[in-house]
Amino acid sequence: MLEISHIGKHYGEQVVLDDISIAAAPGEFLTLLGPSGCGKSTLLRLIAGLDVQDTGSISIGGALLDGQRPSRRNVAMVFQSYALYPHMTVAQNIALPLIMRQLRWWQRLPLIGALIPGAAGPRAAIRARVDSVIGMLGLEGLAGRKPGQLSGGQRQRVALGRAMVREPAVFLMDEPLSNLDAKLRVQMRTEIAELHRRLGVTFIYVTHDQSEAMTMSDRIAVMMDGVILQVGRPDEIYVDPDDVRVACFVGSPQINLLDGVLRSDRTIELAGIRLTLPLPIDAAPGSRVTVGIRPEQLHEAMGDAGATVSGTIGQTEHLGADILVHLELADGHPPLLARLPVEAHARAAAGMPMRLSLSPLSLLVFDAAGRRLRARATEPAAAGGLA
Image (cartoon, rainbow, N blue to C red; front, top):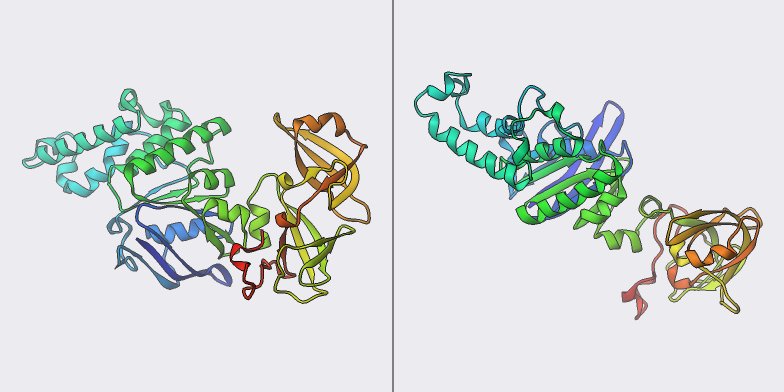
Protein backbone atom coordinates (compact mmCIF):
# COMPACT_ATOMS: atom_id res chain seq x y z
CA MET A 1 0.00 0.00 0.00
CA LEU A 2 1.36 3.38 -1.07
CA GLU A 3 -0.22 6.20 0.94
CA ILE A 4 0.17 9.89 0.14
CA SER A 5 -1.30 12.15 2.82
CA HIS A 6 -1.85 15.93 2.57
CA ILE A 7 1.20 16.56 0.41
CA GLY A 8 2.02 20.19 -0.35
CA LYS A 9 4.84 21.60 -2.45
CA HIS A 10 5.65 25.10 -3.59
CA TYR A 11 8.53 26.89 -5.27
CA GLY A 12 8.60 30.44 -3.97
CA GLU A 13 5.10 31.85 -4.44
CA GLN A 14 4.10 29.14 -6.92
CA VAL A 15 2.00 26.34 -5.42
CA VAL A 16 2.78 23.13 -7.33
CA LEU A 17 0.89 20.63 -5.16
CA ASP A 18 -1.95 21.63 -2.86
CA ASP A 19 -2.98 19.15 -0.13
CA ILE A 20 -2.72 15.97 -2.23
CA SER A 21 -4.01 12.76 -0.61
CA ILE A 22 -4.34 9.44 -2.42
CA ALA A 23 -3.59 5.76 -1.79
CA ALA A 24 -2.64 2.94 -4.17
CA ALA A 25 -3.57 -0.60 -3.20
CA PRO A 26 -0.94 -3.36 -3.35
CA GLY A 27 -0.43 -4.41 -6.97
CA GLU A 28 -2.59 -1.61 -8.36
CA PHE A 29 -1.86 0.25 -11.61
CA LEU A 30 -2.61 3.88 -10.70
CA THR A 31 -2.15 6.58 -13.34
CA LEU A 32 -1.68 10.29 -12.63
CA LEU A 33 -3.26 11.96 -15.65
CA GLY A 34 -3.19 15.64 -16.43
CA PRO A 35 -1.81 18.40 -18.66
CA SER A 36 1.79 19.58 -18.52
CA GLY A 37 2.53 21.64 -15.42
CA CYS A 38 -0.25 20.19 -13.25
CA GLY A 39 2.18 18.71 -10.69
CA LYS A 40 2.02 15.01 -11.53
CA SER A 41 5.76 14.58 -12.21
CA THR A 42 6.58 16.59 -9.08
CA LEU A 43 4.45 14.17 -7.04
CA LEU A 44 6.32 11.24 -8.57
CA ARG A 45 9.67 12.82 -7.66
CA LEU A 46 8.49 13.26 -4.07
CA ILE A 47 7.59 9.56 -3.86
CA ALA A 48 11.00 8.65 -5.27
CA GLY A 49 12.79 10.94 -2.81
CA LEU A 50 14.30 13.11 -5.57
CA ASP A 51 12.60 16.13 -4.04
CA VAL A 52 11.20 16.94 -0.59
CA GLN A 53 7.62 17.95 0.16
CA ASP A 54 6.82 21.02 2.26
CA THR A 55 3.89 19.40 4.06
CA GLY A 56 2.38 15.94 4.41
CA SER A 57 3.78 12.43 4.45
CA ILE A 58 4.39 9.43 2.18
CA SER A 59 4.47 5.79 3.30
CA ILE A 60 4.78 2.33 1.76
CA GLY A 61 3.42 -0.63 3.67
CA GLY A 62 2.88 1.58 6.69
CA ALA A 63 6.55 2.66 6.85
CA LEU A 64 7.15 6.41 6.51
CA LEU A 65 9.48 7.43 3.68
CA ASP A 66 9.86 11.04 4.81
CA GLY A 67 13.53 11.95 5.13
CA GLN A 68 14.80 8.68 3.64
CA ARG A 69 17.29 8.70 0.77
CA PRO A 70 16.02 7.48 -2.63
CA SER A 71 18.19 4.36 -2.39
CA ARG A 72 16.41 3.27 0.80
CA ARG A 73 12.83 3.72 -0.40
CA ASN A 74 12.44 0.42 -2.26
CA VAL A 75 11.01 2.18 -5.31
CA ALA A 76 12.29 2.17 -8.89
CA MET A 77 11.76 4.98 -11.36
CA VAL A 78 11.62 4.84 -15.17
CA PHE A 79 12.31 8.22 -16.71
CA GLN A 80 10.99 9.83 -19.87
CA SER A 81 14.56 10.10 -21.25
CA TYR A 82 15.41 6.43 -20.32
CA ALA A 83 18.55 7.74 -18.47
CA LEU A 84 20.75 4.89 -19.73
CA TYR A 85 24.54 5.05 -19.53
CA PRO A 86 25.72 5.28 -23.17
CA HIS A 87 29.12 3.62 -22.49
CA MET A 88 27.56 0.54 -20.88
CA THR A 89 26.00 -2.48 -22.57
CA VAL A 90 22.40 -3.52 -22.08
CA ALA A 91 23.44 -6.13 -19.50
CA GLN A 92 25.65 -3.64 -17.65
CA ASN A 93 22.89 -1.00 -17.52
CA ILE A 94 20.44 -3.51 -16.11
CA ALA A 95 22.96 -4.91 -13.63
CA LEU A 96 24.09 -1.53 -12.29
CA PRO A 97 21.49 -1.15 -9.47
CA LEU A 98 22.37 -4.58 -8.10
CA ILE A 99 26.10 -3.96 -8.40
CA MET A 100 25.78 -0.69 -6.47
CA ARG A 101 23.62 -2.28 -3.81
CA GLN A 102 25.23 -5.70 -3.32
CA LEU A 103 28.96 -5.14 -3.97
CA ARG A 104 31.33 -3.06 -1.86
CA TRP A 105 33.35 -0.37 -3.56
CA TRP A 106 36.50 -2.45 -3.81
CA GLN A 107 34.53 -5.35 -5.28
CA ARG A 108 33.29 -2.98 -8.01
CA LEU A 109 36.79 -2.03 -9.15
CA PRO A 110 37.47 -2.73 -12.86
CA LEU A 111 39.43 -5.88 -13.65
CA ILE A 112 40.61 -6.70 -10.13
CA GLY A 113 37.21 -6.37 -8.48
CA ALA A 114 36.11 -9.78 -9.76
CA LEU A 115 39.26 -11.38 -8.29
CA ILE A 116 38.74 -10.08 -4.76
CA PRO A 117 37.65 -12.86 -2.35
CA GLY A 118 33.92 -12.89 -1.68
CA ALA A 119 32.96 -11.17 -4.94
CA ALA A 120 32.36 -14.26 -7.08
CA GLY A 121 29.14 -15.36 -5.36
CA PRO A 122 27.34 -12.01 -5.48
CA ARG A 123 28.47 -11.43 -9.09
CA ALA A 124 27.09 -14.82 -10.13
CA ALA A 125 23.76 -14.04 -8.46
CA ILE A 126 23.63 -10.66 -10.21
CA ARG A 127 24.33 -12.27 -13.59
CA ALA A 128 21.56 -14.79 -13.02
CA ARG A 129 19.07 -12.08 -12.08
CA VAL A 130 20.05 -9.92 -15.07
CA ASP A 131 19.72 -12.90 -17.44
CA SER A 132 16.25 -13.58 -16.05
CA VAL A 133 15.12 -9.99 -16.61
CA ILE A 134 16.65 -9.89 -20.09
CA GLY A 135 14.72 -13.04 -20.98
CA MET A 136 11.49 -11.67 -19.55
CA LEU A 137 11.78 -8.52 -21.70
CA GLY A 138 12.84 -10.30 -24.89
CA LEU A 139 16.30 -8.69 -24.98
CA GLU A 140 18.36 -11.89 -25.25
CA GLY A 141 20.14 -10.96 -28.47
CA LEU A 142 20.84 -7.41 -27.37
CA ALA A 143 22.67 -7.92 -24.05
CA GLY A 144 26.06 -6.90 -25.49
CA ARG A 145 24.83 -3.82 -27.35
CA LYS A 146 25.07 -0.24 -26.15
CA PRO A 147 22.07 2.16 -26.03
CA GLY A 148 23.16 3.96 -29.19
CA GLN A 149 22.71 0.71 -31.12
CA LEU A 150 19.11 0.21 -29.95
CA SER A 151 15.75 1.45 -31.15
CA GLY A 152 13.55 3.63 -28.93
CA GLY A 153 11.41 0.67 -27.93
CA GLN A 154 14.45 -1.43 -27.08
CA ARG A 155 15.94 1.37 -24.96
CA GLN A 156 12.61 1.62 -23.14
CA ARG A 157 12.73 -2.11 -22.37
CA VAL A 158 16.25 -1.71 -20.98
CA ALA A 159 15.06 1.12 -18.74
CA LEU A 160 12.23 -1.11 -17.53
CA GLY A 161 14.69 -3.94 -16.94
CA ARG A 162 16.95 -1.75 -14.83
CA ALA A 163 13.93 -0.96 -12.64
CA MET A 164 12.72 -4.57 -12.52
CA VAL A 165 16.05 -6.06 -11.49
CA ARG A 166 15.80 -4.42 -8.06
CA GLU A 167 12.42 -6.06 -7.35
CA PRO A 168 11.01 -2.84 -5.86
CA ALA A 169 7.79 -2.49 -3.90
CA VAL A 170 6.60 0.30 -6.22
CA PHE A 171 7.38 1.15 -9.85
CA LEU A 172 7.31 4.86 -10.74
CA MET A 173 7.00 5.71 -14.44
CA ASP A 174 7.29 9.31 -15.64
CA GLU A 175 5.82 9.51 -19.16
CA PRO A 176 8.02 6.63 -20.35
CA LEU A 177 6.42 6.40 -23.82
CA SER A 178 6.39 10.06 -24.83
CA ASN A 179 9.57 9.76 -26.95
CA LEU A 180 8.22 6.88 -29.05
CA ASP A 181 6.31 7.07 -32.31
CA ALA A 182 2.56 6.38 -32.33
CA LYS A 183 2.78 2.73 -33.45
CA LEU A 184 5.46 1.87 -30.92
CA ARG A 185 3.54 3.61 -28.12
CA VAL A 186 0.57 1.31 -28.73
CA GLN A 187 2.85 -1.74 -28.65
CA MET A 188 4.62 -0.63 -25.48
CA ARG A 189 1.29 0.09 -23.73
CA THR A 190 0.40 -3.55 -24.19
CA GLU A 191 3.82 -4.70 -22.99
CA ILE A 192 3.74 -2.52 -19.86
CA ALA A 193 0.22 -3.69 -18.98
CA GLU A 194 1.31 -7.32 -19.43
CA LEU A 195 4.44 -6.69 -17.36
CA HIS A 196 2.29 -5.30 -14.56
CA ARG A 197 0.10 -8.41 -14.60
CA ARG A 198 3.14 -10.70 -14.42
CA LEU A 199 4.91 -8.82 -11.64
CA GLY A 200 1.88 -7.98 -9.51
CA VAL A 201 3.70 -4.89 -8.17
CA THR A 202 2.21 -1.45 -7.58
CA PHE A 203 2.69 0.84 -10.60
CA ILE A 204 2.38 4.64 -10.39
CA TYR A 205 2.30 5.92 -13.95
CA VAL A 206 2.43 9.57 -15.03
CA THR A 207 1.13 10.71 -18.41
CA HIS A 208 -0.73 13.45 -20.22
CA ASP A 209 -1.98 10.93 -22.80
CA GLN A 210 -5.50 9.80 -21.95
CA SER A 211 -5.20 6.76 -24.24
CA GLU A 212 -2.36 5.41 -22.11
CA ALA A 213 -4.31 6.09 -18.92
CA MET A 214 -7.58 4.58 -20.15
CA THR A 215 -6.07 1.40 -21.60
CA MET A 216 -3.62 0.40 -18.85
CA SER A 217 -4.91 1.65 -15.51
CA ASP A 218 -6.89 0.08 -12.71
CA ARG A 219 -7.64 3.62 -11.52
CA ILE A 220 -6.91 7.12 -12.80
CA ALA A 221 -6.29 10.27 -10.76
CA VAL A 222 -7.00 13.35 -12.88
CA MET A 223 -4.80 16.27 -11.81
CA MET A 224 -4.96 19.95 -12.71
CA ASP A 225 -3.37 23.02 -11.15
CA GLY A 226 -1.77 21.03 -8.35
CA VAL A 227 -4.93 19.30 -7.10
CA ILE A 228 -6.60 15.95 -7.76
CA LEU A 229 -10.01 16.54 -9.32
CA GLN A 230 -11.22 12.94 -9.40
CA VAL A 231 -10.02 9.39 -8.78
CA GLY A 232 -11.80 6.38 -10.26
CA ARG A 233 -11.80 3.54 -12.74
CA PRO A 234 -11.28 4.56 -16.38
CA ASP A 235 -14.95 3.96 -17.23
CA GLU A 236 -16.08 6.03 -14.23
CA ILE A 237 -13.83 8.94 -15.16
CA TYR A 238 -15.25 8.97 -18.69
CA VAL A 239 -18.94 8.29 -18.04
CA ASP A 240 -19.38 9.99 -14.67
CA PRO A 241 -16.99 12.99 -14.32
CA ASP A 242 -17.21 15.08 -11.16
CA ASP A 243 -15.91 18.28 -12.76
CA VAL A 244 -16.30 19.90 -16.17
CA ARG A 245 -12.48 20.01 -16.47
CA VAL A 246 -12.36 16.23 -16.12
CA ALA A 247 -15.13 15.85 -18.73
CA CYS A 248 -13.19 18.07 -21.14
CA PHE A 249 -9.78 16.48 -20.60
CA VAL A 250 -10.88 12.84 -20.86
CA GLY A 251 -12.45 11.81 -24.14
CA SER A 252 -11.49 12.12 -27.78
CA PRO A 253 -13.02 13.87 -29.60
CA GLN A 254 -13.70 16.33 -26.82
CA ILE A 255 -17.10 16.59 -25.17
CA ASN A 256 -19.61 19.19 -26.42
CA LEU A 257 -20.41 21.95 -23.91
CA LEU A 258 -23.57 24.07 -24.16
CA ASP A 259 -24.85 26.83 -21.92
CA GLY A 260 -28.23 26.08 -20.39
CA VAL A 261 -30.74 27.29 -17.82
CA LEU A 262 -32.69 25.24 -15.30
CA ARG A 263 -36.38 26.10 -15.61
CA SER A 264 -37.26 23.66 -12.82
CA ASP A 265 -35.42 20.93 -10.94
CA ARG A 266 -36.22 18.55 -13.83
CA THR A 267 -36.43 20.88 -16.84
CA ILE A 268 -33.43 22.33 -18.63
CA GLU A 269 -33.34 24.69 -21.61
CA LEU A 270 -30.43 24.68 -24.04
CA ALA A 271 -29.86 25.44 -27.72
CA GLY A 272 -33.47 26.56 -28.11
CA ILE A 273 -35.06 23.34 -26.80
CA ARG A 274 -36.40 22.14 -23.45
CA LEU A 275 -35.56 18.74 -22.03
CA THR A 276 -37.02 16.87 -19.08
CA LEU A 277 -34.34 15.27 -16.93
CA PRO A 278 -34.91 11.70 -15.67
CA LEU A 279 -34.50 12.80 -12.03
CA PRO A 280 -34.62 16.17 -10.26
CA ILE A 281 -31.22 17.68 -9.60
CA ASP A 282 -30.07 19.66 -6.61
CA ALA A 283 -30.06 23.19 -8.05
CA ALA A 284 -32.44 26.14 -7.92
CA PRO A 285 -34.68 26.99 -10.88
CA GLY A 286 -33.15 29.80 -12.91
CA SER A 287 -29.60 28.57 -12.32
CA ARG A 288 -27.27 28.88 -15.27
CA VAL A 289 -25.56 25.57 -16.02
CA THR A 290 -23.17 23.97 -18.48
CA VAL A 291 -24.39 20.83 -20.23
CA GLY A 292 -21.97 18.25 -21.60
CA ILE A 293 -22.85 15.82 -24.39
CA ARG A 294 -20.39 13.24 -25.71
CA PRO A 295 -20.14 13.19 -29.55
CA GLU A 296 -21.12 9.51 -29.71
CA GLN A 297 -24.35 10.26 -27.84
CA LEU A 298 -25.66 12.48 -30.62
CA HIS A 299 -27.50 10.69 -33.42
CA GLU A 300 -28.84 11.71 -36.80
CA ALA A 301 -32.56 12.45 -36.30
CA MET A 302 -34.97 10.54 -38.49
CA GLY A 303 -38.70 11.42 -38.53
CA ASP A 304 -40.14 12.20 -35.10
CA ALA A 305 -36.98 11.69 -33.05
CA GLY A 306 -38.04 13.55 -29.91
CA ALA A 307 -35.62 16.22 -28.70
CA THR A 308 -33.52 17.46 -31.62
CA VAL A 309 -31.22 20.32 -32.51
CA SER A 310 -30.96 21.60 -36.08
CA GLY A 311 -28.15 23.27 -37.92
CA THR A 312 -25.91 23.34 -40.96
CA ILE A 313 -22.93 21.05 -41.43
CA GLY A 314 -19.70 23.01 -41.33
CA GLN A 315 -17.27 20.19 -42.05
CA THR A 316 -16.82 16.44 -41.72
CA GLU A 317 -13.87 14.30 -40.70
CA HIS A 318 -13.57 10.70 -41.89
CA LEU A 319 -12.30 8.16 -39.33
CA GLY A 320 -12.82 4.94 -41.24
CA ALA A 321 -15.79 3.28 -39.54
CA ASP A 322 -17.10 6.66 -38.29
CA ILE A 323 -17.34 10.27 -39.37
CA LEU A 324 -17.20 13.38 -37.24
CA VAL A 325 -19.78 15.97 -38.17
CA HIS A 326 -19.41 19.60 -37.08
CA LEU A 327 -22.93 21.01 -36.89
CA GLU A 328 -23.16 24.80 -36.80
CA LEU A 329 -26.09 26.05 -34.73
CA ALA A 330 -27.95 29.34 -34.82
CA ASP A 331 -28.07 32.08 -32.18
CA GLY A 332 -24.36 32.06 -31.43
CA HIS A 333 -24.20 28.57 -29.89
CA PRO A 334 -20.89 26.75 -30.39
CA PRO A 335 -20.87 24.00 -33.05
CA LEU A 336 -21.85 20.51 -31.99
CA LEU A 337 -19.53 17.62 -32.77
CA ALA A 338 -21.29 14.33 -33.51
CA ARG A 339 -19.68 10.93 -34.09
CA LEU A 340 -21.88 9.16 -36.63
CA PRO A 341 -21.61 5.84 -38.49
CA VAL A 342 -19.93 6.07 -41.88
CA GLU A 343 -23.27 5.31 -43.55
CA ALA A 344 -24.29 8.90 -42.78
CA HIS A 345 -21.60 10.19 -45.13
CA ALA A 346 -23.99 10.53 -48.08
CA ARG A 347 -26.18 12.87 -46.03
CA ALA A 348 -23.34 14.74 -44.35
CA ALA A 349 -21.70 17.19 -46.71
CA ALA A 350 -20.60 20.73 -45.85
CA GLY A 351 -23.48 23.17 -46.19
CA MET A 352 -26.24 20.56 -45.85
CA PRO A 353 -28.86 20.84 -43.10
CA MET A 354 -28.99 18.13 -40.41
CA ARG A 355 -30.93 17.38 -37.25
CA LEU A 356 -29.33 15.63 -34.31
CA SER A 357 -31.29 13.88 -31.59
CA LEU A 358 -30.16 13.74 -28.00
CA SER A 359 -31.41 11.95 -24.93
CA PRO A 360 -31.79 13.58 -21.51
CA LEU A 361 -30.21 10.41 -20.10
CA SER A 362 -26.94 11.31 -21.80
CA LEU A 363 -26.60 14.84 -20.42
CA LEU A 364 -23.89 15.78 -17.94
CA VAL A 365 -24.94 18.92 -16.03
CA PHE A 366 -22.42 21.19 -14.28
CA ASP A 367 -22.96 24.31 -12.19
CA ALA A 368 -21.39 27.71 -12.87
CA ALA A 369 -18.22 26.67 -11.00
CA GLY A 370 -17.85 23.50 -13.09
CA ARG A 371 -18.95 21.05 -10.39
CA ARG A 372 -21.22 18.19 -11.38
CA LEU A 373 -24.91 18.54 -10.54
CA ARG A 374 -26.38 15.16 -9.65
CA ALA A 375 -29.76 13.76 -8.72
CA ARG A 376 -31.02 14.76 -5.30
CA ALA A 377 -29.88 12.37 -2.60
CA THR A 378 -33.39 12.39 -1.10
CA GLU A 379 -34.94 10.87 -4.20
CA PRO A 380 -35.75 7.14 -3.74
CA ALA A 381 -34.43 6.35 -7.22
CA ALA A 382 -31.32 8.52 -6.94
CA ALA A 383 -29.02 5.55 -6.28
CA GLY A 384 -28.72 5.05 -10.02
CA GLY A 385 -27.49 8.62 -10.45
CA LEU A 386 -28.01 11.01 -13.32
CA ALA A 387 -26.21 9.92 -16.44
